[in-house]
Length: 303
Ligand SMILES: Cc1ncc(COP(=O)(O)O)c(C=O)c1O
Image (cartoon, rainbow, N blue to C red):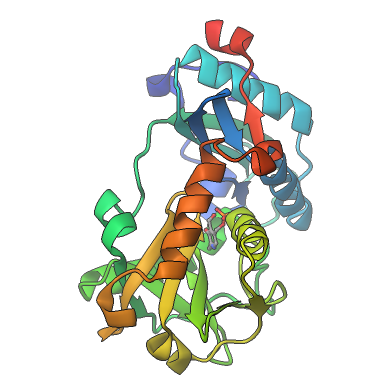
């Protein structure tokens, strides 16, 4: 926290922290995997780039460089002796000023790491999950910044997630103002139709997922056509396969949307193929994607 290593139970903030009241913070969700090269953080540089972009969009100068955050993360993983973990860097407007204007409040930065299993469950990754199209629309660029990963924006995801869970589904799918499919509450979404992979375009109201970029590249490398376009709600129901990607969830098949079974209610062959290749990339089993891995130096691990 702010340049110090702090024990888990001491990682506390004041109740008048600006970000707690107004959502004025930006964060990342990153994973490190146990690979043959050692503990390796998946696309660490890309996640840190997005953190800095999110901060810039909310006029929040970060008091550390990317390299400082990168090496602090290495040391943190080393000190905790973790082979694999979830990594949560967050920068937020801290204690000192109340009122809406965040510009006078300090910017606090912390990084936390912990062991975190499959976000939507191992069974979800294996068998697929059920999803509900939410009555809440995804935040639009008219009011907020869909491409930023900012704390307050997640109230939108939380409402959709709560609605889907209370209705008995595992995940929510949010549409945009025009009714086009956007994404899950914390994942990007893809449909397989006529042997091609379709996903909302980069300029849609989506978070520009790091795993989205990875899966598009992997799919194209495997010879699949990936089409970025507007997707209608009904196409979800009629798709041969649907899946989602995100750092927490990884690649998760969707077996049912609004009680319509997708592809017979089982993960389809393209989803399975991508899931295998993606898993190989995450775990450093594919030389081609080796550059995506930021290996934690052994010195950090001995620290
Ligand atoms: C709203 C939202 N969309 C998409 C994603 C997927 O992004 P990534 O693949 O970078 O984890 C996430 C997860 O961070 C998210 O919170």
